[in-house]
Length: 378
Ligand code: MRU
Picture (cartoon, helix red, strand yellow):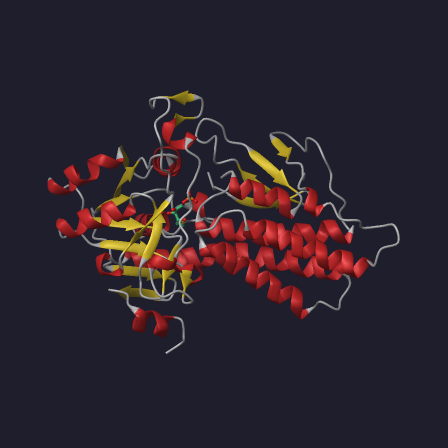
């Protein structure tokens, strides 16, 4: 089964509800910037590249909504697809009734950009995508809202297709690094569900398998949101790629017993010096990998590299709700009254990174000079 994490259907963005996988496979439909922002914030869609593509559609949807080409439709749409209502008051702008239509459109678009930018802070792909959409808009700002909306929608479609192409290219470069028979550990979900399709870290696994290598995956469960247990394991099981689930605290034991040949993870933001932000717990895995002489690779599209920041210290780390640590969904096991921390990401220093796998090739031991060259800034 091909996983379509995001798709355009019935003039809306539909996204798999990743909060309820693997028990329930369900699409939710989105018709505005505010509703897409809420989908990102609440983790219906997650994973850096997928968040970027979703945000691009959010901008296009807002332009469509404001241009009144596509007035929002509420309620149930088709089987298993529920439309998420827009309820952000700041976006309820007067579209008719004597106002200046252009001003209304422009200020509505700005509000759309703002609400999307506030949805999650760490993955730079979100801001990269918004910037790209803004440039497209600015390039045609004198055209009619309908024309602008159509062009923005075409750009979002292009970004979706491009993301899969990039993941395929990264997959091919990364697959060459893995020996036939390799046992690869991954953390979180950097798969088709975290992208428009194929995946970054799991794209490497898929490409290696497609090239005929026998690869088996070890998936950290990834507390507290369980992206490994729920999403990575599900993706691999769907495709009969051998996968073994472990709890996060078992990785060191397996490494010490010679059961891990390589680590491949994704990333939410790479700083210009090569420091890597990824799902909380990744840093621990990287330290363990170095201790056991296991290569630690990071699959990273260029859109995830943030050359504007000097190091990982500048990466904003999202702190999520305490409830996620107290238990899971309605079950709480933590002692009532205990104080809780829930940073959702950590930073692995560049010195622990064996190589960055990008669509342009693998950058071994990334540093500022190598990343400047990679990004065409040298
Ligand atoms: O909180 P999440 O699930 O959005 O975190 C996702 C990750 O940390 C992924 O590893 C990262 O985005 C890379 S996805 C290709």
